[in-house]
Image 1: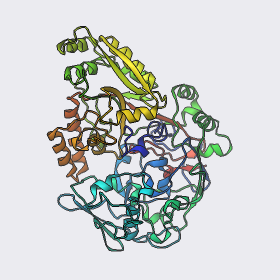
Image 2 (image 1 turned 135 degrees about the vertical axis):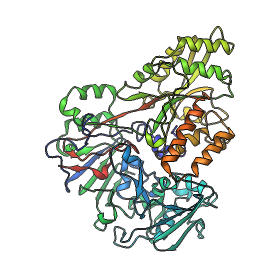
Image 3 (image 1 turned 45 degrees about the vertical axis):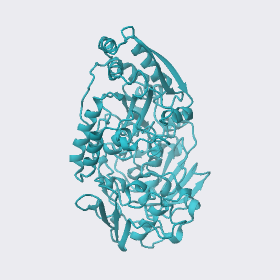
Image 4 (image 1 turned 180 degrees about the vertical axis):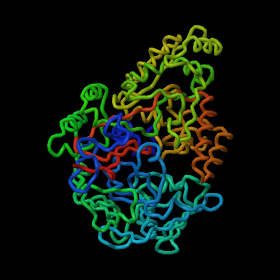
Amino acid sequence: MRQPSVIARRVAAASVSLVVAAGAAACGPEDSDAKGSGGDSAPHKGGTLTVLNSEPQTDFDPARLYTSGGGNVPSLVFRTLTTRNRENGAAGAEVVPDLATDTGRANKDATVWTYTLKKGLTYEDGTPITSADVKYGIERSFAPELSGGAPYLRDWLVGAADYQGPYKDKKGLSAIETPDARTIVFHLNKPEGEFPYLATQTQFTPVPKSKDTGTKYESHPISSGPYKVVKNENDGEHVVLERNTHWSPATDAERKAYPDTIDVRSGLDSSVINQRLSASQGADAAAVTTDTNLGPAELAKVTGDKELAARVGTGRFGYTNYIAFNPTVKPFDNPKVRQAISYAIDRSSVVNAAGGSALAEPATTFLPNQKSFGYTPYDPFPAGKSGNPAKAEELLKQAGFKNGLTITLTHSNDKNFETSPEIATALQDALKKAGITVKLQGLEDNDYRDKIHSVKTEPGFFLAHWGADWPSGGPFLAPIFDGRQIVKDGANFNTGLLNDKSVNGEIDAINKLTDLDAAAKRWGALDQKIGEKALVVPLFHPVYKRLVGSDVKNVVISDWTGVLDISQVSVK
C-alpha cells in the first residue's frame, strides 16, 4: 500500500486513512488467539457489522483500488487471482490462491505466468466468471479515466507501456492470452518472481464486458465475492453490502463472510469513532474501524480500563519512517556528515515524539522487522537508544567541520503524518548535542510532497516514510534504491539518487527467484549493503492500536495489511 508514492498512494497516503494509521483492532494485546471479546467467542453467521471510518470508501472500482485499499472492504466484493492468507501475524503475509487453483506457474525465467481458474466461479447474477473477464478487468484499468490503481502492469507486461485501455484500443493487450475459458497467461518484459503478489491487486478482478459502465461502474460493480453493493451514497460515505447468494464458499477458502450485512459509514471525526467504539452502544457494539488509530492519550485511558483493554489490539504493516539525504546537496555529499547524523540520532526521543513505545518501535534497518520482507537485524552506525554525540562530533571533525555545522530539516506540518513537527523537533534537540544546529522548514503537506518528490527541488535533509504494496523486500527497496527508477521529470522516490550497478544487478537477480523464502534472505542482505551507504537513517516502524465493539468476534490481523480483516469477523 511508502513515502507515499505514486505506486502506493492508495496504500500509504491519504492522511491517516490506511497506513499512517493502518493498524488493526483485536481482542487485546495479551490475547494471542484473537477471538474477540465478550462471552462465547465462537463465530456464527448473521447480524450486521458496522464499519466506522474517517476516510470515505471512494472509487469503489477494481481498476482504481489496491487490494488492501479501504481496509479490506473491497475484498468482500472483488476476488482476484491470488489473495492474502487470512490468518494472524506472519502467516497472514503469505500469498494464496483465490480465483485461481494455485498461486501461478512460471516458466524457467519467470517471464511467463500461467493461471487456471477454479471450476464453479460465478458473479452475483449467477453467470460464470471466465479468463476473458479477468483479462478485460485488467485492460480497463489502463483507461485514463479509471486511473488510480497500481501501475506495475504497465511496466511489467510486454507492450503495455502506451496502452490506453479497451475504450480506445479495441485490440486489447496481446501480452495477456486466454486460450480457453479457465486459462490466462501473462507475458512479462523481465523476470518477476513476485508476480503472485501482484495478482492480489484489485486490477485482477474479473469484470464482465457487457456490464461495464465505465466511470459509473463504481456505483454498482458486479460482485465476484461474498457480498454485493446495494448502496453507495456520496461517493463512498455510506456503503452497504449484502450477501451475494451466488458466492460459493466451496470456491473460496479465505473469506468467512459471517455477517449478513456490512454497513460502512465514513466521514466521521477520529475522536468520535473511538468514543463510539469505546461506549459500544446499540449498533456500535458490533462495529469496527479500518482507518482510525488510538492516539497516545486515548490509549492511556483505554489501557487503564480492563474491559476496554480487552478490546484493543495491535497491528503492524510493512512501513518505515526515516531521514532521507540528498547527496547532491552540500554538506550531505560527504559520507562522514551523513554518518555523523546517523550516530547522533536519539531514537528514544523520536519514539516518544511518535507516541511512545506502544505506538512506535525504533528502527535501524530500512526493511520492516518482519520475516516476509527478509528482515535481517543490523545497525551500521550503532549509537544505542539515545545516540552517540561524541562519535558524531568525531566524524564531523574528520569531515572538516570541527566547529559543528548548521543544516535545514524539511518536514510536513501535518500532525497526522510521521513527518510531523514533533518528530522534527526531537531530531533537532538530539543533533544539537553533537554540535549540529538544525533549522526546521515546515511545509504544508502538498508543498512538502511536491518539494521532496522532485529531483529539481529535493532538499538535502528531510523526513520521509515508505510502505510496501505487498510484504516483500522488492516493493520496499527497489523504488527507493534502484537507479533505473530515478524520475527526473516527474514524481521521484529514489531520494538518495542512488544508481549503483551492483545494487541494480542484485535487484534483477532477486526478481528472478520464484522461491520467495530464498528471495527474502537476499533482500535482507541487500538492505544491509545499502544501509552502510548512509543514504537514509531509519527511525521507527509504527505500531497500531485499535478498538472494536464489544460484540465483535473472530478478529484476525495479518502482517500483510496490519488491518482488521473484515472477511473473518463475526458479530454477536
